Image 1 (cartoon, rainbow, N blue to C red):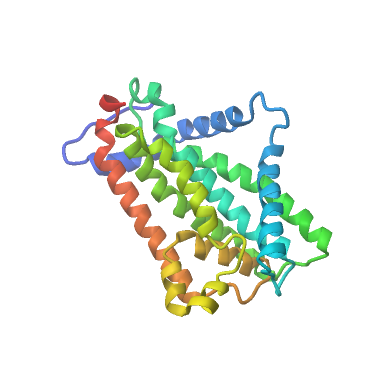
Image 2 (cartoon, rainbow, N blue to C red):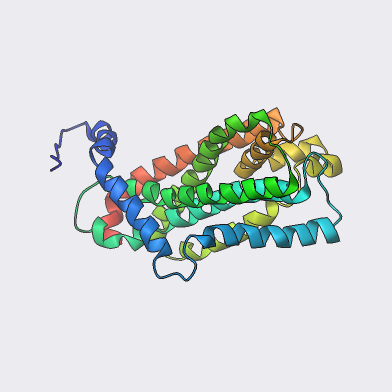
Length: 275
């Protein structure tokens, strides 16, 4: 049983210590979310594979056949899927985190625990989906007889970066969603719009070639630009990684995470009353 100690002037320090003390609750909530996600579904975890696979087919048909875009460093379908997987991870993490407080209102109003556990544990669902879809990428590489680069060992670093990129906006939206329920409509819009403004169906090099390097630096304010370019660099496209744009994306992701944590902590004490 966890013992709660209230000390004047020690609220912040005790809060982060409580995160470790409530680690079992974190694990329970994460496991519950995974089970609920696939409960009473006809094909179960296959949905994690079908969504990026069908979206990849659409992008291949539109961007490769119609728009005439192509990839020289790797087969176009692999390039698209290498961008689709981190984007799907980001989108799922953002959606799950953004609605986590409202869907767990019964817990918030009854017991104390660091509320940040809820959006953090919900992100584990996205991590499970991502682990499953890596098998799809491996199967596509096998189909094309494509051997990934040795740089694939750096893939976990970009997975962590995509987690950071999703958690910051996720904390902001979930805190705002408690007070303004309109934000539940914003999340699907952000996910849908972000898919087409992120370099999923095309390379970031296209932006630089058509609009110049300044446009590429501005485009890098999209946190997923550095993540997707990094994924493709790990898979085998040595030209995909652009140091300057990666730094911009990474720094902006960290800024959003800081803002998300700060706003979440400032509003957290009102959640039980408002929700």
